[in-house]
Image 1 (cartoon, helix red, strand yellow):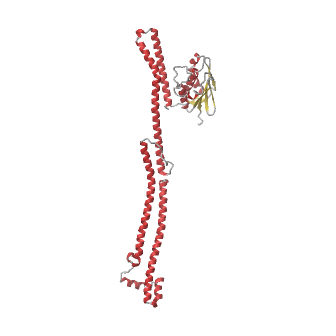
Image 2: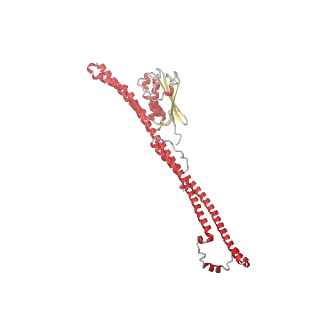
Image 3: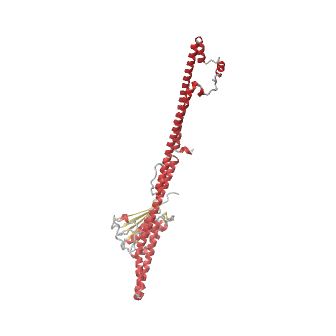
Length: 415
C-alpha cells in the first residue's frame, strides 16, 4: 500500500500495535485478578456457610463439606426449589448477588479506569504522530510565505521517506527554479542595460561626426566643392562604421545572451578557414604580410560554418593589426580522436603577461592597438562563437615574440 511508504504511517501502526498488545496483556492480567478476587469472595462465603451448618449439625460435617468442595449435585433441585421462594435464582443479576456485588463493582470501575487510561494513550500516540506530520506541513507553509517575501532557502527533509519527503523535495525544486528564473531575469535586465549603454557609447562618436558634417554641409554656399565631396565621403565612412558597429554589437548581444542557435554540420575545415581569410587578404597584402595555410585538406569536423568562420576571421584580423609590414601569419590545423585543433600564429609584437588574461573580454583594447575603429569585441565574439559550439579557445604569447591562438572543435564521439 502506498500509505505505508510514509514513515509516519509505519510509526503510527507500530506504536498502536505495541500499545494494543500492552492493552491485551494488561486486560488478561486484569481479568485473572478479577476472577481470583471473585473466587476468594466465593470461598469466604462458602466458609461462612459451612461454619454455620457444621455448628448446627456437627454430625453431618463430612457430608456438608463434601457438598461444597466436590461440587456434588444430589440436592441441587431441592435447594433450587427452596431458594426460589426467596427470589434467589440463577437468573439473578450479578450486582444483586450479595457475594458478587462487591467484586462486580470493583471489576466494573477498574475496567472503566483501564479503558480510560488506554484511550488516553491511543489519543496521545495519535496526537504525537499528527503533530509530527503537521509540523512538517507548517514548515512548508512558513517557507511558502517566505518565498513571497523573497526568501528562497531550501527546507530540510527532502531526503525523508514518504509523501512528505516528496512534497519537501518538490517544494525545494520549485524554490530553486524560481530562484534561477529570478536570477536569469536579473541578468537579462543587467545585460539589456549594459547593451543599451554599449550601443549608445559606441554610436556617440560617429553620430557626433555626422551631425558636425551635416551642419557644415548645410551651409553649402560657404563650402567649396572639394570640401563638400570630402565631407560627403566622411559621412559615408561614418555611416558604414555605424552599420558595422550595429552588426557586431548585435552579434555580441546574441552570443552573450544565448540567443544563437548554432547550425552544426559535417564539413571540411579547410573550406571554413579559406572563407575566413579570403575577405582579409587585401588588408594583409597592403601591409605586405605573408599568409601560410598548412593542414590536411581532408579533415572533416562537425561545426557551425558561419560562426566558426567569424571566429577565425576575427582572430586573423587581430593578427594583421599587430604584425608589422613584411611579417608572417601561419594558420595550421590537425586532428586527433577527440578534437580538431586550429592554430593561428604570427610573429608580431606579442601580448604581455598582464594583458593575456584580458584579451577575450568585451570591449578590451590592448595598449598597442593601432586601429582607431577597433572597439574590442572581435576576440570576445570569437570566444563565445567557439565555446557556444562546445569548443575551446585560448592564446599563448610573450611580449615581442608573437602570438598563438588555438581553437579546438570537439568531434562527435558517438553515433
